[in-house]
Amino acid sequence: MTAIATSRRRTALTRNRLPRYAPWAALAVGLVVGAALSTLIGFNVFGWGVFSAVIYTLVYVSWSGAVEGGRKARDKFATCLVVGAFIVVVLPLFSVLWTVLEGGIKGLLTPGFLGTSMNGVSGIQDNESVNTGSRVLGGIYHAIMGTLLITLWATLISVPIGLLTSIYLVEYGEGRRLAKAITLFVDVMTGIPSIVAGLFAAALFATIFGPGTETGFVAAIALTVLMIPVVVRSSEEMLRIVPNELREAAYALGVRKWRTILKVVIPTAISGIASGITLAIARVIGETAPILLTAGFATKINLNVFSDWMASLPTYIYFQILNPTSPSNPDPSIQRAWGAALVLIIFVMILNLVARLVARIFAPKTGR
Image 1 (tube, rainbow, N blue to C red):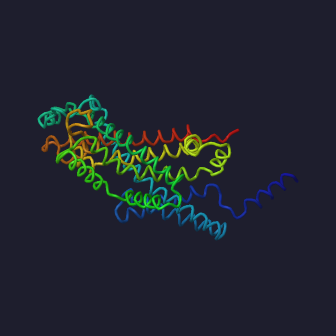
Image 2 (cartoon, rainbow, N blue to C red; image 1 turned 90 degrees about the vertical axis):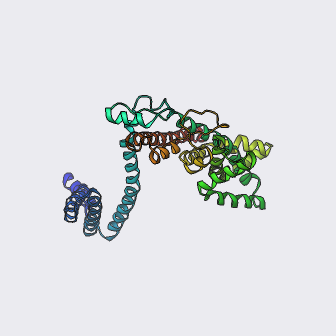
């Protein structure tokens, strides 16, 4: 009797519900029918994926509507739309990563690629490497150092300015005209094209030091113009979400406002601030136009940001593709460009990982 009662209870609970294999069965039908429809118009992977997704959604939602009713069917339809949107967003990302890996891993693994510059590399050597099958000469060491130095100086300039501006907007400028004006200017700066920032820096230094002033520091100033609004906005939002009760508790203990900001507000929001700064760095590290206008392009190693032209990874990629060392055999230059692109993506990924690590380390402790 107990077994019969349990069986009836399970039947009542699982009545009007799809079986567990329903999603997989609908997926199998979608893949088969999608392949057939795609073959009719000329088979390709993209068309197969689109047809399979549409057929899967129709089969799964219709099956749910017939068994579970309209409410569950609408829920599953919304779920399919959300998952489909996620796949649409992720697929281009994986496509870019796969393309860069496929083209750049060979250049990255070339001996000396990360430790040498392009100084002295000629088209004759590139032709010899293509004809004899030897390794491609020339590397990206000078571009890596240029990117790191320019970004470092831009960070050192923009982070204090952006952080202090956000502190004023949140802690001191509430309702004041100056704060409203600063907010307006920050919003306008957020939408400035990167080449305009490069033109501004180039014109500024040309006015002060004369025409033709192109150095790594000028490029850092151009990137600073792009970084400051991102740092201000991200830091401002993080400071605003700090509970006012923390500030009021510090004031009740007689702590001065500046010390409250330094010891209470900023440590509470430091994880979000660090993430925003890292995103600002990732935003500018791949800029090409402002660096072309302000730092030029160099084939030799230059570690002085205040003198002479300086290379960077974006400009290195640009010149290797646009002006290959050997126009008759552009393959070595293309290989270098893909390798540099892979290194640049690795830098951006490392920055995001560092932001997550900093956020986790400095996040407020919620346990007792």
